Length: 271
Image (cartoon, rainbow, N blue to C red):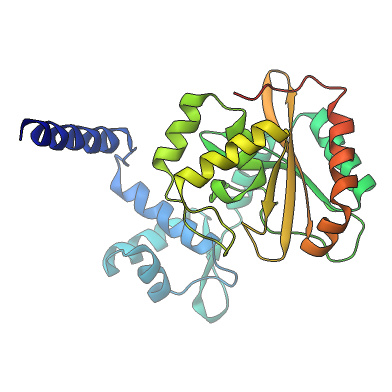
């Protein structure tokens, strides 16, 4: 009975620690306003008031007040059918972000060279504030280019991405274990890894082979390979992504290209 009580107490403590570590907004009105901006940003043609309320869960009166404020600040504007779209002042935020968020020139040139030589979409990913992001993308010359997972945005579904798996394979064991404990391993496709045990096996394979694969785990019909690069003390994953059939047919050449370029650079060691 004592062990059971201790286990229950330890479980409660772990839940309390998780809650303490999770950042919570201090100013509710700011959090609500941002939820509206994110909802509108994720829509293609803008959102009406009822759609915004449904996506954010905000009360009607608060929604109207916040929409009026955001519109007066130029962060939202009215479009066709009275739908709200992002305002012109959001462009100032984008410009500022692009100035402050940069990719090393060496990596940008490397990605361009890989895209030219392979004919496929090439990109480089790294960590920012604990999330996987794409720093630079170059489209190849072959018809029908890969697009899934290669846009500049927060990563998400890290367990399903070649770049995410590779960066975790070269991370410290502590960082890797922390990720695995917190990952829900949600399936994106029938090939997505969905258990911690299978993910650990995949990490060991990557550490042995020196490269990571996405075998239609993030998006059906697309495959990707990632190899590690280290520049200015930072680890990056340089990737090539292509439609599955073409990727499979040219995999050996693509991997040899990536590895030949990486030999001239100091590679990060696998933990």
